[in-house]
Amino acid sequence: SPYGVYEMAGNVWEWVADWYGMNSYTSSPDRNPAGPSRGGSKVLRGGSWLNMLYDLRSTNRNYLGPMSRHFDLGFRCLQDASK
Image (cartoon, rainbow, N blue to C red; front, side):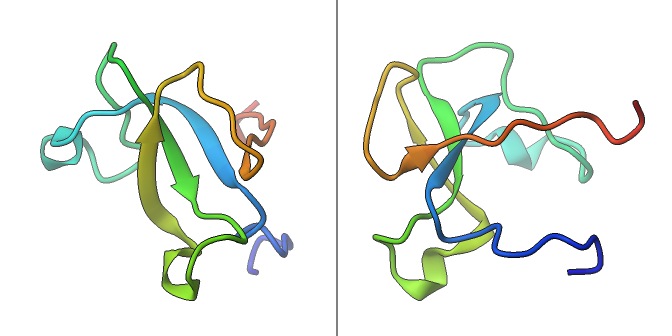
């Protein structure tokens, strides 16, 4: 990785803060697109060890209700790089 991070994909699906919108990417900015301001499902990224190889991409997107739990879901703590 050019950023010095490795093995970031394929472990668990990652919850992200964005609400899911089926067509939200058609009108969002190219950099750091945010989902709708509210919704019924949250976005999941990446895929897990249960998925096929093609699905283990950071661009892979899925969604679930925010109260959902499953053994192949997780999250990553992060901080804005500008801070």
